[in-house]
Length: 190
Image (cartoon, rainbow, N blue to C red; front, side, top):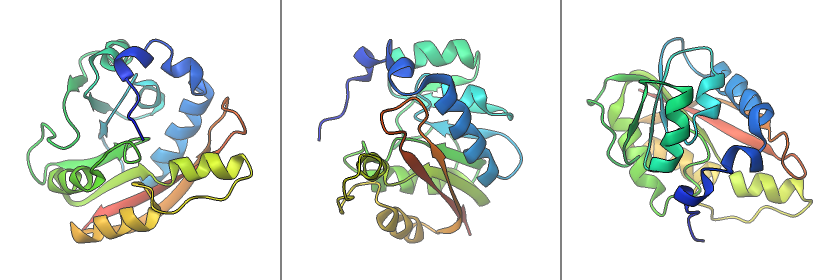
């Protein structure tokens, strides 16, 4: 699988992926799994989901083009950074989100390890899992095992780095073909 070129896709990203309705559904589902307080959104993209949240969000992304959109939605609260090397001290962040990220990473373990490093004890990671499986199921096809964001894999990676499942949820991908249901997994640092 090749990673999309987000420098090119940024201009049309929101309109081709459900726009505001999907963003509001995602934000509401994510917030139900997070403790109170600010959030570090890893791979913030255009900032559409972060802007729909009711709490302060700091966003990081590797794509300059995506951040060009996010900076308008989250002025003064975005930075360019790699998900595998977050610009935060160890044990300093209360909540992290990684939505529609792990399925893209050739090494999703590096992201989980880095998030575990920056989360403080009791901190929570909320991430999407089984993204491609959600699309396949919505289309009436069986899920294919072995994805980088397969729930069992993410749970095992979390456990390896001191993160335990503390919740789950989902949201509908409004505005997308077949409106897939995207699973969310919450992992807390012990």
